[in-house]
Image (cartoon, rainbow, N blue to C red; front, side, top):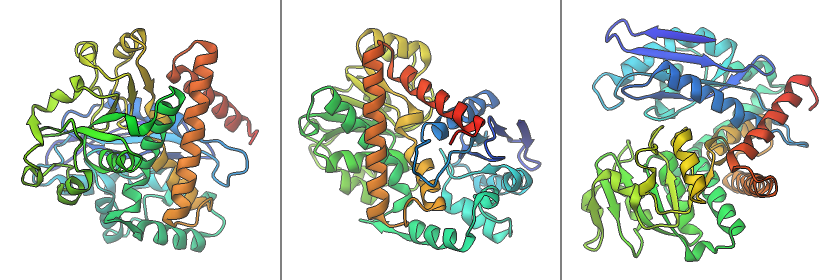
Amino acid sequence: MDITWQDPDTGALGYAVIDTLVRGTASGGLRMRKGCTLEEVRGLAQGMTRKEAIHLREGRHYVPVGGAKGGIDFDPRAPGAKDVLERFLVDINPIMHAYWALGEDLGVRQDDIDEILARRELGSGLSAVNKLVADPAAVEARATKAFSAIVDGVAQDELVGGLGVATSVIAALHDAGRHPRESTAVIQGFGSMGGATARHLAEAGLRIVGIADADGFVSNPAGLDVEALLATRDQFGGIDREALRPEDQVGDRDDWLAADADVLVPAAVSYSITPDNCDRIIASLIVEAANMPVLPAAEESLLARSVTVIPDFLANSATNAWWWWVTFGDVDGSWEDSRTIVTTTLRELTTEVLAVARDQGISPRAAAQAKADANLAALHAGDL
């Protein structure tokens, strides 16, 4: 199902795509960026189908649903962006209630979604899941606990996605026989996903030697002070240059690609690694924290150079899965419970996919795709 919407006030176009329904429901975030297209949203919805299916796991209460995605072609920093978001949510609400469980994505904050839906009395982003839930009161209690938790100054729901990415990075390093404390990383993007990834990688001992935001590339071969940068970033993931130390360096925002690091984590926008720029990459491991950051032709070139690429629908799947683990009761909503299930699941998935890729002589993406396809077939067959 493809829906194209036009904002009556600004003329901005918005899109909602439901790629697959499982148990009559699909899940996927809503993004806002200037230049967003229907083709982009379709690709993201397909990725959500894979991101859901890869988490089918015996013994879990959460049984994956289908994939969906939304996108609005508008600059999220422009005046009136929240008003455009509100008009989109109001108009698309019947689809949300019937089929589409949505949350934040690039350029859209969960707090804004929640505030708009509550003020307009439109239910919640999870309204479509009500038909699958036996005890709504218990779900609400777990969700309240989960979404009100603050961990070292950052909301828990803004940490779990990056924790999953960091876990995938660490698992891939171990698979390659490398110790995290002897490794370096560069991250493109310092919003919810990039910031949380940086925090958890630094906790594991990696040196974060570079972070790119919209205004440039901040680097330090000896390692950046991630916590200081997190404490001063703005709502769009912008780094406060006044918080930098004298030894920190500032360069052009595209410098992250060629940075001297073991690990590259694209955590900002889609299509950031292309056939035209992939030859600049020095890193031997790329872990996709953003959705669709590596174009297929670029990935082919990288694989030919023995660069490992962990696909987005595995590496950045923890936020989506965590919503459902909370909703269906696989976790109680606490940070301790959430951290355990995220790290255990993402470590096992990454290790399994890399082992299959090595044994079968295929890429990690192909191995992850095969697992998602098999799980999706089981979901459609009712073999759960």
